Length: 280
Image (cartoon, rainbow, N blue to C red):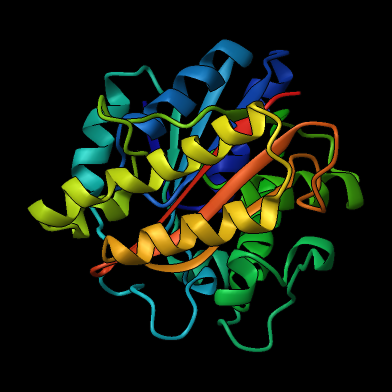
């Protein structure tokens, strides 16, 4: 496994692989890797000849008051984990390498269709930061395939939309959410939870599953389901940003096709997000 921090060095190696006729999969991460990330790496290895994992804590996707400086950085441990998974290359640039002219006044990529609701409403500018850095990574690496987790469902749709709109020749693959045995979705921010909060956090997934069960039983009063779920979370000590039932393809109004139930809620210092997809 090679570790590279410079764009020019990465491109030289990628050119060698391309000349050898090898396909390339990219797994973008912010580090602090857990089993959910490693599932993405495993899927990348199944899909392509070479796997590149990027580790970059992207400052432009953190909004005012969020935890950019406190975000856990565990580079040595991440490298050890990736080395056991036969990763071909780890790209770990400095901020100045990705944003050579600084963070202000830079070119910015936005996906307006998916940008200003759900998480976008509570984290204004977040998805512009995500779309911009992913566009940069796609241009730097020029992968055939990119792997993202379905836990960040709105992010996944943002990336799929920008790939379509900007004509990137990249196949975006979503990997189902990896969970603890008790159902809690794996997240780097779970370590912000106290022991009691960790137990209480299970209610988020159970609440979403309860909505999904009700819909499977032909309940169609979606607004009431959302309100009841929100009230249940508040009573348990959560501070919900939203609980929403949406069309799974575009996050629009749900109909007769696939749906997704999404939620974001604060518990202590941790902002937890989760979703359940309902196949019709």
